[in-house]
Image 1 (cartoon, rainbow, N blue to C red):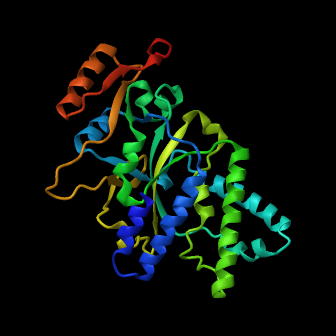
Image 2: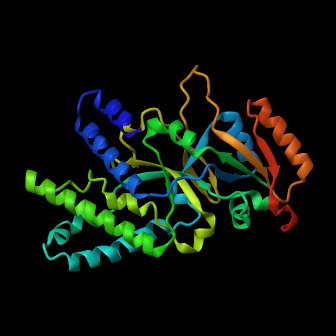
Image 3: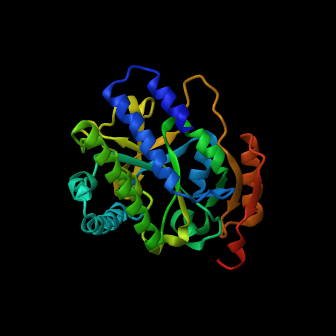
Length: 316
């Protein structure tokens, strides 16, 4: 899939923006390869009745602006891990190459990050409480491989979150060393390092995989779409966004931006999402919720398993 993305991108004129995006894809693929966890057969998305209805009828998934994630400290948490390990690497590197790259390595890039979250489990009380209408919602199962194919054209990567501090530090260390090696080689060849504004570093991608261990019960995976900002108004590069259109919905007292994907071209048939099963919340009436959910799904072409949560007998 990475090769296909590069071929599509490089088929036109090689503008500076296109060249940077090609490098971005290669860098993302490198970090993606560092995330060695293979996805389980099914990934689950907790939602309420309105979300269930909207996902199935529209054949779209919402990618929410990451600034509105439930754990808003995530980016700060990843930056702290990176900062700690970077200091260790600067001290240990007697060549001085890491210190020479310090400004680039510690830069926070201007970006817009959109995510759609999933879980390895459909039977977590904490997940039902946080995202599944406190047990009165639904949990939709997706085939992760088909999901990856569905979002291929958007340079979206499916990643498992890393909760173990030791694994996070090793991920940070690998990312720092990879970036230092790349920048040292670039300086030797060209006499200069990457521009901070355009260098989409391996380190910045590694931050996206780190989450506070307190949330490990979520067993979270994310589809992540990252847009580089090109102007002071916070607008992303038009070549990168293509047909993506930002929409808005209420989030508490705020207005939350989101992207609805995959984009459907006007007049073209909408492909079904790779939904493979649905679990009805443990606090719902089992017989009623299963019967109506099954009929609703079949009316939209989904002949999949519909079950009641196993937590129904222990959590009322």
